[in-house]
Length: 294
Length: 194
Image 1: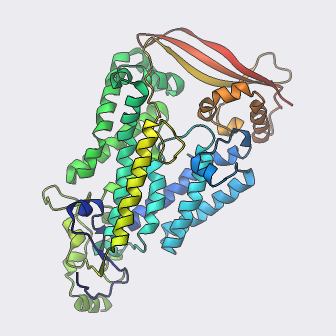
Image 2: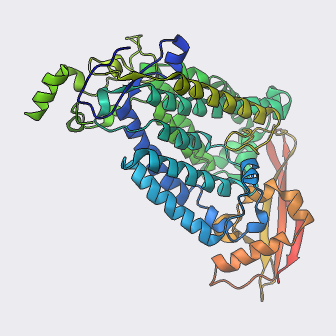
Image 3: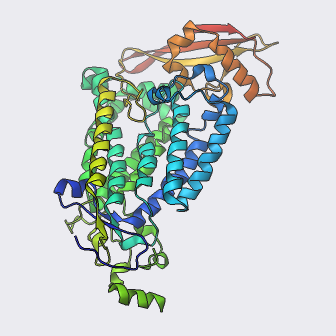
């Protein structure tokens, strides 16, 4: 492929010609990555301060540390309160730099490593939450893209497309493999669907307004079947376009909003990664999109 | 003026410089979610192709991750986080079974009855789910409750120090998916706080 000289400061690259590779690493505007990066890195700050903010408290309970495989392999010890506070500070500083697009690769990798360590300390005390898979993967694939600026609206990149595709696949696998796990854990998937999982969840952590639904087990069983169906079909979203894609993303948003209101389970780390499906470059004000100033 | 100069040098169509249009099913040409045709507009240049190495590792690494994630499901292990099993709410519950919920209580000086504490990191330094995930270990080693008592004292400096920590469980019987009777509480472990 021949080179075309431009004044663009951000180099772009050609996408592969193989149909699978064109799907696997499509060309997408770098501006989309620049916006997505802001979403992800600002959310990581919110995450470490709230959702996964138990790491500092874990500094008080080192006896409960149950290191995960990679933490054991790397001999990562239990966190201390001071260590957690230092790590928190580093994550916030690196995330702000990365969100602002300063030293993009360096700040991105610094976030990936420090946030990865934080994840070992929030997930390594017994309970492992599943809502962080796509977010952790996003933190690790974003620095592979290189420089991406808001002005790169018409600068297409297969590197960016690959990274966003990885996040998209992680998002849908979070749902699809949860169906696989329900099937494995229950032996027979109908046992799960016809069982009392939502009843169990509502009784343990349900909001007061949702308690009357405990009197309607048939409705809750129907909801379980519906959940199974849309989780099983979630990979279809990878191939949707236009209004169907927007509709699917909105549907999953509403699903998580409902589980949050009813059970306090928001799945926000996954929800934020749904943004990888959207043409985020449309959010960039036109005054920032002048070609050649990327 | 500078902008005009750039356009002349790059032979770019000013109309191609606007934001990418929404992904359109009508176009049928988009090869990625939200990858509209304008992503490859006239101004989208290709300085150099992705190298074979660059493409290669971008295929191999996700393939390995996919295998690990898949193994994580069938081995039912969370050990490979973030590629562990997605077990959250995966276990079937019997409509005529019981609903268990682990709780934590503490006896304080001058109080006749144990007091229920919030089972979360802000109160006792650890979440209920974390303890439930290693419940057998905690029951076998009740001295772990000392750590929760210490955390409670540090996190609630204005509260009195507990004398005894009690790990408990409430059990509710279901019949056809409806709760029957009152919940029963059992003691799983106790620890005299040092």
